[in-house]
Image (cartoon, rainbow, N blue to C red; front, side):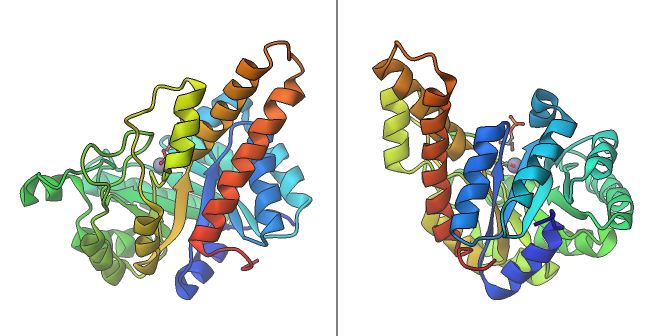
Length: 307
Ligand code: G3H
Ligand code: 13P
Ligand code: ZN
């Protein structure tokens, strides 16, 4: 199918109480793993490329791979720019064929974030492209920190409501205690669900959970066994993600789980078969491992059979 705007699939998920998996890709194998698995499970899906992925693979390569492979499956697929920082990149992505963009101006003061987001919404909506923005700082917050410290970092629900009204953004990533990468928490892995509930009440639009990799025990063990030094890694438990979905999260961003799976599988093959130098025998099993992880996540998010 041709690529669709993210808004179309997110609103349906939001209303019906499930979430869409938004999976990062940087190469053909990752993209194939995402699209083939989502298609097998009849799940709408968001494929996302960061600015880093775009400079690694090239903008036109990302878009042509996405269009070609999405064209071969029969599920709704949106191509999303993950963490866009520069207006220039956002414009280039829209022009090249992305159907959704994120403006991440969360490091700026509220007024500047809102003004820049509003500007991106005006540009993107002219081309039917959806927009995601972010409020608050993405970081794990320990149970021991004070209320004031927590408030200084995490999203303010009142402000989130005002932000959505002022910017007309299509979806919002509120900081509720997740962070990117493999080391999300030192203490208990928990989301601020009370805060999320208030954000839902104040905003009324699909919410996005960044930093949502779970790093389950079996994946962590495989990564450590393959030689990746991530023994202390801690992700967001899937049950926490599922609670968040009940509170308005309709897009769940997953990258770290896929990277760990891909690289662990590659490293295992390289260690077991040092004589192998056929790329397909190394990247093929890595693609298969990523496909398994994606299948598990799609089932957990409740988006299978929603296409
Ligand atoms: O949120 C960040 C994603 O995991 C992409 O990471 O900027 O290293 O491509 P990246
Ligand atoms: P993880 O690092 O938890 O996979 O988060 C990815 C993400 O938020 C991409 O925007
Ligand atoms: Zn993110």
